[in-house]
Length: 386
Image (cartoon, rainbow, N blue to C red; front, top):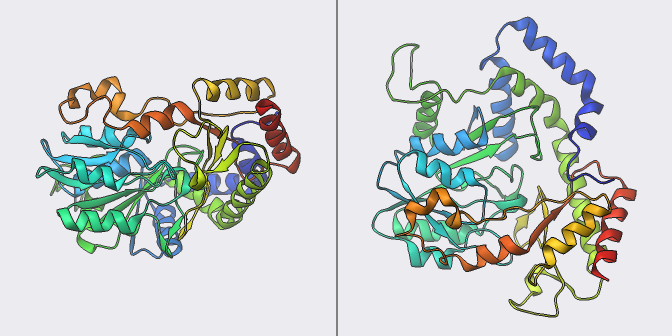
């Protein structure tokens, strides 16, 4: 058996340290915010070469808080990818703004700036590029586009803590950046957690106020904020795991290299950068690290072109005991809850995102995979493609 993810394989070897962290927080009696949160914020800021890091209750709340900090309001338009997790667009809607769905790049699955240029309007206030699956967007193109149209940039780096673009950390190039510490992430908590990062002193101070009901000092409210605080316990757990983060990432990179080396030798298998749309001869398209990017491989996501072939491959792998996941089966512009955006986002407004949703399949990539398990996955794919 090869599960899609095995959090115990990572957490249980740290059991003694995690229990010690729990006991330290328990005996401190300080369970909300506190010294572990402060220390984690400083440690993450140093790691990403950022100025401010602000611990939050989840990656979703980080996006929501970023929108609130930038005063995005009802009637504003915010450009975001259609091919991504729901939270990106859901948070836009929660502040009353309108998500404008942008198509995907067929190679990286990230936001397609050429499509964004077609959809920006005078009502557009911000853009949220998502660094999907552990690889940065083309941030030169994003920032050039944002400057040309006077847009603020919120980098959704939920899946990309530690990823870099031309030497800069994902999350630090835009107006604000957000991270998630959901257990499946490369740095995963034992529950929910998130972070917002900024190099702007004033924005960072506003975000700190908003995460605690907009109050400073206590009971004196400058803004209408929310309860977005990070628990001390999760911060303490994350601090136990943070010294291992580089090793975890290197193992993910090695696993990705193993897959690419083995699978690229199979007939009719191509790298994403070499794939031509509607190429009927390609049976499997492998993900690729783009020039200038340092991919951290939160996911290793295949494309399987051809009607019904992705689902058939998934069935075969499931029968072989290999875990897989479809990220994401319905693009956001086709989600029922966003039907009210139809005047801005037509059903067929993001054709590449729709195609990716029908073709993508992620396979196990977590750091603790053994060589035997990696071989099981590649053998399973090879057998399924026969």
